[in-house]
Image 1: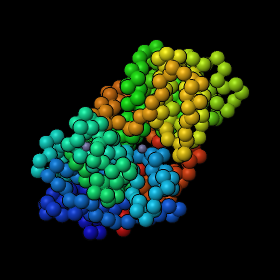
Image 2: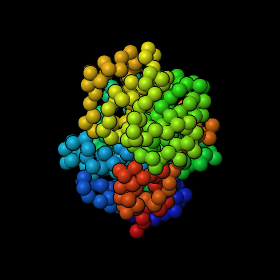
Image 3: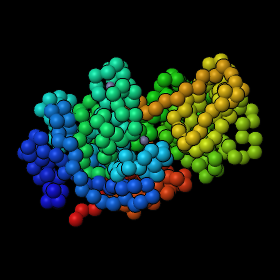
Image 4: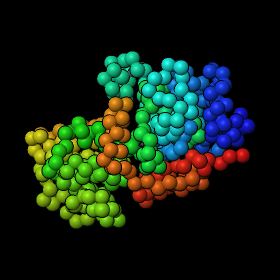
Amino acid sequence: MKKSIALPPLALAAALCAAEPSARIPARGLVLDAPDTSFRVADFTRDPVGPKDVLIEILYSGICHSDIHAALNDGGGDPAKTFPIVPGHEIVGRVTQVGAEVASFKVGDIAGVGCFVDSCGACDQCGLGREQFCRNRDPQPNRLRDGRNFRGGYSNRVVVPERNAIHIPAGADLKRVPPLLCAGVTVWSPIHASKVKKGDKVGVAGFGGLGHMAVKYLVALGAEVTVFDVTDAKRDDALRLGAKRYVNVRGPNPWAGMEDSFDFILSTIPADYRVGDYLRLVRYDGGEMAVVGLPPGLTIGLGELMSAPHRRLYGSIVGGIREHQACMDWSLAHGVLPETVVIPATPEAVAKAYQDVIDGKVRFRYVLDLATLPQD
Ligand SMILES: [Zn+2]
Ligand SMILES: [Zn+2]
C-alpha cells in the first residue's frame, strides 16, 4: 500500500486504472482517533470504484466549523461508534478513475464533493433534488447508509457515486472553490428560497465562513446589506465586501431604529444568542428570517416567537445536489468566491486552524492543500 502512495500522481492513476475493478483504494489522510486527541497521518483503504462511482485525487479541502463540532464530539454521541474520523466535506480534486457506467465525468475532469456522499438516488426526496433529506440516508453526518463512517476530505483521494459529485469547470481558481460546497450552498439555498432581489433590505447575522459568503451573494444580487456580529474587529472586512452597515450587537442600543424594517435576515451565528432579537427586526407581515447556524443546545421559546409576530422564521440545511451545482456554476460565472487561506495538510496546521476558527480569527475559510500531506 505504501509503495502505491509513493508513486507520482499520473503513474498512480495509471496503476489504479489497471487494477482489479473490485480492488480497494489505498488512501492516506489526517485521522482523529478520539475527541481530545491530535490528528495523525495514517493510511487506510476506501471502497472499490463501483460501476457508478468516480475516484477523485483530492487537491484542496476546506475546514468547516462543523468539522470542529465533529472532532470535539459536540453532538454527544458515543465516541466508540463515531470515531475514528477523517473530517472534510468541502472537497475539490481531479477525477482519476471512473466506473464503467459513469456518463458525466471522465478522467481528468475537476470534481467537487460536499456533505452528501451516499444519498440513495431512488427515494422521493432524492428525486426532488433534496438529497439532504434522503429517506434512506443515515441522519448522522459522515456516515454511510450501511452505518460505516465515511472518511472525508482531509485525505488524498475519495470514492463517491457520480450522482453525488459536482462538476467544476476547467480554469476555476480551485483553492477558492472548496467552501462553495458547504458554506456557499448553505447560504445560497435560503437566499434563493426567500427570493431576495435588488433593493431588498437584508441582514446577515454572524460574519464568519458562512456569513461572508452570504454578504457576497446578497451584495451581488443588489440588496442593501447590514452585518451583525459581536466585535468591531470585523467591521472593515464587512464594508470591504460591500455591506452598507455593520452593527456590533455588544455595543450600546444595538437594535435601535431597526425593528420591523428588514425584508430578510439570515442567521449564521454558531454560538448562543436570542433568535427573537433578530426576528423582531424583519418586517411585520412578510419579512423572513432563515437560520443556518446551529449553536449546540440553543432553543427558541414560544414567547420569543409571539413577541415578534407575523414574521416567517425557517431553518435551512445545506442544499440538494442540484443546488450545489447551481451555486457552483453561478458563483464561478459571477466571480463570487470565498476568501480562503491555504494551509498545509498537517496535524499541526489543522490544530492551529481549529483554534483560530473557535476564536473567530479566520478570514474567512481555511483550505488544506493536500499536496502537502506528509509522505513517508
Ligand atoms: Zn460544513
Ligand atoms: Zn434518497
